[in-house]
Picture 1 (cartoon, helix red, strand yellow):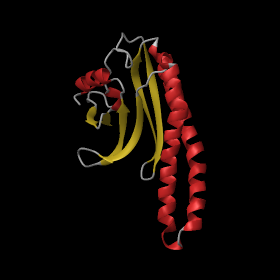
Picture 2 (tube, helix red, strand yellow):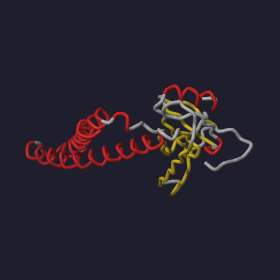
Picture 3 (cartoon, helix red, strand yellow):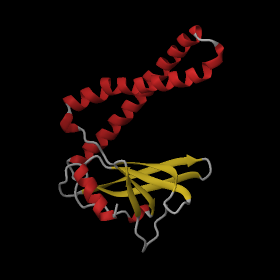
Picture 4 (cartoon, one colour):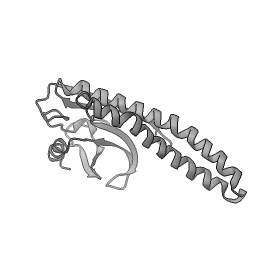
Length: 189
Protein backbone atom coordinates (compact mmCIF):
# COMPACT_ATOMS: atom_id res chain seq x y z
CA UNK A 1 0.00 0.00 0.00
CA UNK A 2 2.80 2.38 -0.82
CA UNK A 3 2.31 5.63 -2.64
CA UNK A 4 2.78 5.33 -6.37
CA UNK A 5 2.67 8.77 -7.89
CA UNK A 6 0.63 9.27 -11.00
CA UNK A 7 -1.88 6.61 -9.99
CA UNK A 8 -5.23 7.37 -8.43
CA UNK A 9 -6.32 5.69 -5.21
CA UNK A 10 -8.63 2.73 -5.81
CA UNK A 11 -11.55 3.32 -3.41
CA UNK A 12 -14.98 1.72 -3.14
CA UNK A 13 -17.77 1.92 -0.59
CA UNK A 14 -18.87 -1.11 1.43
CA UNK A 15 -21.58 -0.92 4.11
CA UNK A 16 -21.02 2.75 4.91
CA UNK A 17 -17.22 2.48 5.04
CA UNK A 18 -14.63 3.13 2.36
CA UNK A 19 -12.16 0.43 1.31
CA UNK A 20 -8.92 1.71 -0.19
CA UNK A 21 -7.35 -1.14 -2.15
CA UNK A 22 -4.36 0.74 -3.59
CA UNK A 23 -2.47 4.01 -3.27
CA UNK A 24 -3.63 5.17 0.17
CA UNK A 25 -1.28 8.15 -0.14
CA UNK A 26 -3.28 9.42 -3.13
CA UNK A 27 -6.63 9.51 -1.31
CA UNK A 28 -8.16 12.98 -1.62
CA UNK A 29 -9.75 14.56 1.45
CA UNK A 30 -12.36 17.34 1.09
CA UNK A 31 -10.80 20.51 2.50
CA UNK A 32 -13.32 20.95 5.27
CA UNK A 33 -13.51 19.68 8.84
CA UNK A 34 -14.40 15.97 8.90
CA UNK A 35 -16.58 16.53 11.98
CA UNK A 36 -18.45 19.83 11.52
CA UNK A 37 -17.86 20.67 7.85
CA UNK A 38 -16.21 24.01 8.67
CA UNK A 39 -12.93 25.21 7.15
CA UNK A 40 -10.00 22.81 7.56
CA UNK A 41 -7.30 24.28 9.79
CA UNK A 42 -5.23 21.25 10.77
CA UNK A 43 -4.77 17.63 9.70
CA UNK A 44 -4.46 14.33 11.50
CA UNK A 45 -2.58 11.16 10.64
CA UNK A 46 -3.68 7.67 11.64
CA UNK A 47 -0.84 5.17 11.95
CA UNK A 48 -2.09 1.63 11.32
CA UNK A 49 -0.06 -1.42 12.20
CA UNK A 50 -1.08 -5.07 12.01
CA UNK A 51 0.57 -8.42 11.58
CA UNK A 52 -0.94 -10.80 9.05
CA UNK A 53 -0.06 -14.49 8.95
CA UNK A 54 0.82 -14.65 5.25
CA UNK A 55 2.18 -11.11 4.81
CA UNK A 56 3.91 -10.25 8.08
CA UNK A 57 3.91 -6.88 9.78
CA UNK A 58 2.23 -4.06 7.84
CA UNK A 59 2.58 -0.34 8.66
CA UNK A 60 0.39 2.23 6.89
CA UNK A 61 -0.20 5.93 7.50
CA UNK A 62 -3.52 7.55 6.60
CA UNK A 63 -2.41 11.19 6.22
CA UNK A 64 -4.21 14.46 5.76
CA UNK A 65 -7.51 13.97 7.62
CA UNK A 66 -8.72 17.58 7.97
CA UNK A 67 -10.24 19.09 11.11
CA UNK A 68 -10.93 22.60 12.33
CA UNK A 69 -9.10 23.75 15.46
CA UNK A 70 -12.23 23.33 17.59
CA UNK A 71 -13.07 19.77 16.48
CA UNK A 72 -9.52 18.37 16.44
CA UNK A 73 -9.23 17.96 20.26
CA UNK A 74 -12.83 16.71 20.42
CA UNK A 75 -12.02 13.98 17.89
CA UNK A 76 -8.98 12.91 19.93
CA UNK A 77 -11.10 12.80 23.10
CA UNK A 78 -13.59 10.66 21.17
CA UNK A 79 -10.77 8.20 20.28
CA UNK A 80 -9.73 7.99 23.94
CA UNK A 81 -13.33 7.39 25.02
CA UNK A 82 -13.65 4.55 22.50
CA UNK A 83 -10.45 2.94 23.80
CA UNK A 84 -11.66 3.20 27.41
CA UNK A 85 -14.99 1.64 26.42
CA UNK A 86 -13.23 -1.23 24.60
CA UNK A 87 -10.90 -1.97 27.53
CA UNK A 88 -13.82 -1.86 29.96
CA UNK A 89 -15.81 -4.22 27.72
CA UNK A 90 -13.06 -6.84 27.98
CA UNK A 91 -12.58 -6.19 31.71
CA UNK A 92 -16.29 -6.85 32.23
CA UNK A 93 -16.86 -9.47 29.52
CA UNK A 94 -14.02 -11.91 30.17
CA UNK A 95 -14.74 -12.50 33.88
CA UNK A 96 -18.46 -12.69 33.13
CA UNK A 97 -17.75 -15.28 30.43
CA UNK A 98 -15.52 -17.33 32.71
CA UNK A 99 -18.14 -17.24 35.44
CA UNK A 100 -20.87 -18.37 33.05
CA UNK A 101 -18.62 -21.12 31.67
CA UNK A 102 -17.98 -22.47 35.17
CA UNK A 103 -21.72 -22.41 35.88
CA UNK A 104 -22.61 -24.16 32.63
CA UNK A 105 -19.93 -26.85 33.02
CA UNK A 106 -21.55 -27.96 36.25
CA UNK A 107 -24.86 -28.51 34.45
CA UNK A 108 -23.89 -29.82 30.97
CA UNK A 109 -22.79 -33.19 29.72
CA UNK A 110 -19.25 -33.44 28.36
CA UNK A 111 -20.27 -33.91 24.71
CA UNK A 112 -20.91 -30.31 23.69
CA UNK A 113 -18.77 -28.37 26.16
CA UNK A 114 -16.40 -26.90 23.59
CA UNK A 115 -19.23 -25.36 21.52
CA UNK A 116 -20.91 -24.00 24.62
CA UNK A 117 -17.69 -22.44 25.91
CA UNK A 118 -17.24 -20.50 22.68
CA UNK A 119 -20.86 -19.36 22.54
CA UNK A 120 -20.90 -18.32 26.18
CA UNK A 121 -17.68 -16.32 25.80
CA UNK A 122 -18.98 -14.51 22.71
CA UNK A 123 -22.23 -13.67 24.48
CA UNK A 124 -20.35 -12.49 27.57
CA UNK A 125 -18.09 -10.22 25.50
CA UNK A 126 -21.16 -8.79 23.75
CA UNK A 127 -22.72 -8.17 27.16
CA UNK A 128 -19.44 -6.53 28.25
CA UNK A 129 -19.57 -4.18 25.25
CA UNK A 130 -23.19 -3.35 26.03
CA UNK A 131 -22.42 -2.70 29.68
CA UNK A 132 -19.41 -0.55 28.82
CA UNK A 133 -21.56 1.53 26.49
CA UNK A 134 -24.18 1.88 29.23
CA UNK A 135 -21.63 2.70 31.95
CA UNK A 136 -19.14 4.85 30.03
CA UNK A 137 -20.13 5.94 26.54
CA UNK A 138 -23.79 6.87 26.95
CA UNK A 139 -23.50 8.95 30.16
CA UNK A 140 -20.31 10.73 29.13
CA UNK A 141 -21.52 11.56 25.62
CA UNK A 142 -24.87 12.69 27.05
CA UNK A 143 -23.46 14.87 29.83
CA UNK A 144 -20.46 16.22 27.90
CA UNK A 145 -21.76 16.02 24.33
CA UNK A 146 -20.00 19.18 23.18
CA UNK A 147 -16.59 17.91 24.32
CA UNK A 148 -16.49 14.70 22.24
CA UNK A 149 -16.72 14.05 18.51
CA UNK A 150 -16.73 10.81 16.56
CA UNK A 151 -13.43 10.84 14.66
CA UNK A 152 -12.54 9.43 11.27
CA UNK A 153 -11.19 5.96 11.94
CA UNK A 154 -9.30 3.39 9.86
CA UNK A 155 -8.06 -0.18 10.10
CA UNK A 156 -6.34 -2.79 7.95
CA UNK A 157 -7.98 -5.90 6.48
CA UNK A 158 -6.72 -8.80 4.41
CA UNK A 159 -9.02 -9.39 1.45
CA UNK A 160 -9.33 -10.46 -2.15
CA UNK A 161 -9.14 -7.27 -4.16
CA UNK A 162 -11.29 -6.36 -7.16
CA UNK A 163 -8.72 -7.89 -9.56
CA UNK A 164 -8.77 -11.17 -7.51
CA UNK A 165 -5.33 -10.61 -5.95
CA UNK A 166 -5.07 -11.20 -2.23
CA UNK A 167 -3.66 -8.33 -0.25
CA UNK A 168 -4.11 -5.69 2.42
CA UNK A 169 -6.62 -2.86 2.15
CA UNK A 170 -7.38 0.10 4.40
CA UNK A 171 -10.94 0.57 5.63
CA UNK A 172 -11.86 4.18 6.43
CA UNK A 173 -14.92 4.99 8.55
CA UNK A 174 -16.29 8.54 8.31
CA UNK A 175 -19.13 9.22 10.80
CA UNK A 176 -20.21 12.56 9.26
CA UNK A 177 -22.49 11.56 6.35
CA UNK A 178 -22.11 14.87 4.47
CA UNK A 179 -18.34 14.64 4.68
CA UNK A 180 -18.48 10.96 3.64
CA UNK A 181 -20.49 11.94 0.55
CA UNK A 182 -17.92 14.61 -0.36
CA UNK A 183 -15.10 12.07 0.20
CA UNK A 184 -16.88 9.58 -2.07
CA UNK A 185 -17.23 12.20 -4.79
CA UNK A 186 -13.54 13.14 -4.71
CA UNK A 187 -12.36 9.52 -4.76
CA UNK A 188 -14.82 8.03 -7.22
CA UNK A 189 -16.42 5.69 -4.69
